[in-house]
Length: 466
Image (cartoon, rainbow, N blue to C red; front, side, top):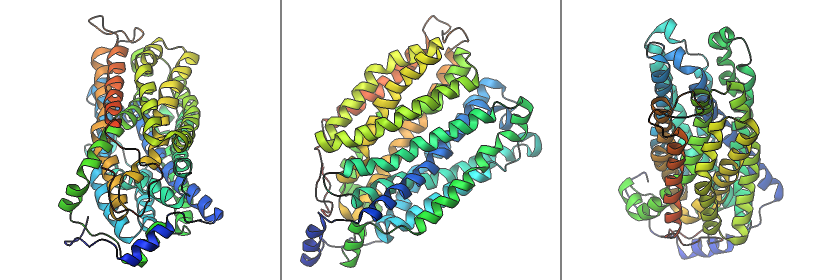
């Protein structure tokens, strides 16, 4: 995607070598190291984002937007959350191009460093009471840094593991790094669960900073492991035969625009659903239903554990029954359960809320995510795979994941009251939230019918599936 000239197709020698590599056998130690190294980076990314979503719901409003009232402060907090998503496509295009040109390992090291440093710095920002308008401005700047790094992190992890994994097991191995997502989200929820247990003065004073500063520990381990990670065998082979593509941005979108478009359709339910469940469920339970912050966070923590199982289930079943079929089934589960999930959340019963979130988000949404891990990389050709996956993920993230909490918070603050989620004109808030998730799921189900299943295709093929 960078440069001004498009390189020709691989030479005959490179093509033969590529086909020979299609069934490569990577040493199991290298495969495991790659899996857990990528998982740790995913944990870093989603620790940062889950942490920020929880902080937005619970503390950032009065600290950084104190003169706008609770409702507007909540919306402003989720507005800065959206900023991180808005810049992710730029990070995806930039780092995706670098990943296709200089290698997956190089870019994965850059992205995890950028995210970790930005997250730690959020914990050091003075509040509005200390430096006035500079406080929210610095917050937005660091969210931009987070978003740029996150724009290529998960795409790189999925591409790396798909290219490392043996044919027939790509779904399983590509899903392993996604466990880092659940781990990062779970750790963030745990940290905030205990942080908000402190006296409110401590939380508002310095306690909210501790979870952000702890990201330095994850960053240190992630950087060390990625420095010792080997490059993907597929990229190494192609680079050795000078078969890498150098496309302009226009050439890239002309060649892969159709694949990106339908890939974005796949992402609407997965990314939008994940964002609204992770970022908004706690805010909904606290603001609209009147549940205590610790109880609402515990609901998310419990469902996160089930989400890890949902990811591996989706990846494993995708190897057996096909990527698209499993993806469609998981999207249907999320869509069908959307209204019941938000209705149950509106009642505020802890056990019922955990079960509802575990089905709608843990199984439905994360089942899609597990199947998606190998699906998206297999949809794109070798020479522009990293950039293609990153562009698909992050452009869709703006329209799905980034907007979802903002729209949801508007629904909550303008429609919901503290009477079990009931709204002013008699329309329960859960209806609108459930309808939003249902529509996202319907878009994805429709998109699956246009995508041929790329399961176990030759990863050295330079053509997209569409």
